Amino acid sequence: MTISVCIATYQGERYVERQLRSILDQLGANDEIIVVDDCSQDRTVEQVERLQDPRIKLLQNNSNRREIYSFGRAIEFAAGDVIFLSDQDDVWLPGRVQLMVNELRRSNAVLITSNFEWMDESERPLDVAFDGVSATSSKRHIKNIIDIFVGKTNYFGCAMAFRRELVPTIVPIPSYVESHDLWIALAANQLGSNLHIDDKTLRKRRHGNNATSTVSNRSLLRKLWSRWIFARSMIDLSIRRLIRS
Image (cartoon, rainbow, N blue to C red; front, side, top):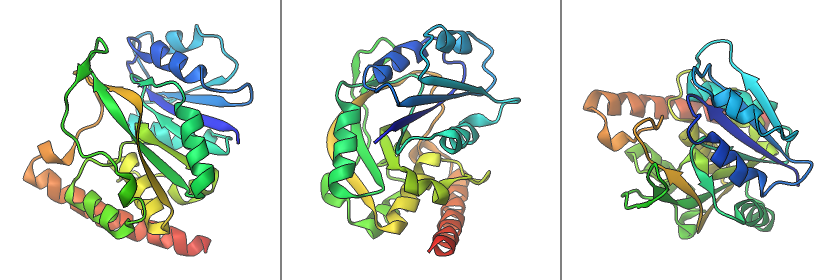
């Protein structure tokens, strides 16, 4: 099974080379990393290009479109049988790719999600409260969808990989979507083809410039807006699923 790793970069010069090296060490000659840069004004592109690895394919947006558009573009461009999502500033733990590919093969699920460790800017361990995923809840699809609705922090794109067959359902990602992570998780749970593993397969870096935020620290108005997006996403994904069936 060939591997594509999709990364959306923006102002990531401090960490992106470290992350790319941790990924490249786990890829074969026929695998690829799709990097979509969102008009970085720092040396992010230079850091990517200096690796001079033919497995890295760099795309650059013509204007700043934010990370959801960039991830969607990377997924559309990816050619691998299994597609991993990756943040620009994390570090993959050794054996991550092989473990997750083996689990996908074993289960026949279309989406796999792992857990991870938190670290700070200097890669020192951090104690951060979040829900994560549990192997025992993989097939509790309705519960997983409810957890997304109530704002639990179970699903993170950086901890996901999925089979190519999921791509026609999830892309293009609609412009109203505020979290590609949850959009993909909703799609897999609607399909009833979702796998959680308890293993921690990467180290997620927490610093002042992280692009994502959780529902729990948002205003009431923003939470209500997120619920509306959830409902619209459920409807749109259901329609796509019906069209494909």
